[in-house]
Length: 491
Image (cartoon, rainbow, N blue to C red; front, top):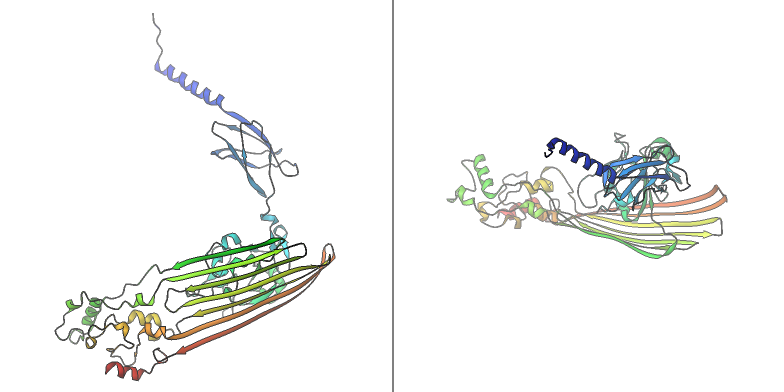
């Protein structure tokens, strides 16, 4: 008589068989994690790269054990103070792992003023800037890239004009009447309220931000608003090398105001003057202006800006002498017509050993910044944007279809106290130049008296020359004869 088996028993048998195959196909891998000196490291996290849910933690003896499944090929180890490492399994059952101490973090060297200190020895609040991330940003000023990158720092930009100087606040607004800007120390030279544009971001080696009293005490009351310590690049031992850093960019506004069309403008005038609308004379109706093309003052005022930044550095050195020579050129045309920014910078540094105990050196930097354009008298009807956005889109009936943007003065303006000139023509004929020249130099002499005792002499110079140029011809808001312009336009 044949034998029969239930489906339930068959299903249980197959499940047990699959479970057995899975268990016996797994292997167990063991190992011990040590540092470079051979000491075991407890608490190291070890994960499987192919399956983040699988892993283990080393015990007090640095040992670990992980059950591996087919397809697992790599282990990832991580621990505070040590570099993360990937280890290939390659079919091994026992894997010894050695971790290397990280060169950053607690052992990072931070410049705090006239000297440098290892981070683990610091007692104050000091932040450092990741220069690799900072130099990726396409900006001409290092201050623009600090926003959102360093905790406790507030960067305020006055406007988007080319060459504008952002304000950096470390402790917030600490004074109602005086400047709350921090003290800058550039290559050992303390500078108060400098031009942030005089430093090429590509030439910066490190930036340290000193926030509390213990870190700023060496500068006295000048460090009350915090201190930003900037160290620029210098020559290093090795063959001569050439470094180039540059970018080219285009600037465009992403939003425009919606202005009145000629049809909408005449309709608004009809609502204001229903019985005396100058645009509805000589048989003209509102529909006659529906397809009329007016003057787009916003389009005439704004353009596509272009940015260029080029930095070149030649450096090198040997056992006794290190040198570095660099130059920087920046040119930016703003999205507003007749607004530009140009910067020229040159820098040279030299370090020379004298004998076995003495070392001398110095740095000299020259920067010339020039900003063109600007609204000389903001507010009221003389403001550039106010004049552009409130200027009528079409000329009055007395001038027919003549383009209004070609006229210097609005011929149909009936307000005697509002003598409004063409904002585009006026702005293009105004000369507004701001020129800043900065010279920063320092020299030093270091003499090693003992192994841990060094005698240092430092000297520095900081010279700033500021020049403002302004000129108005007869086609400008400030230089034209208004009465003559009115007579000329009307007759």
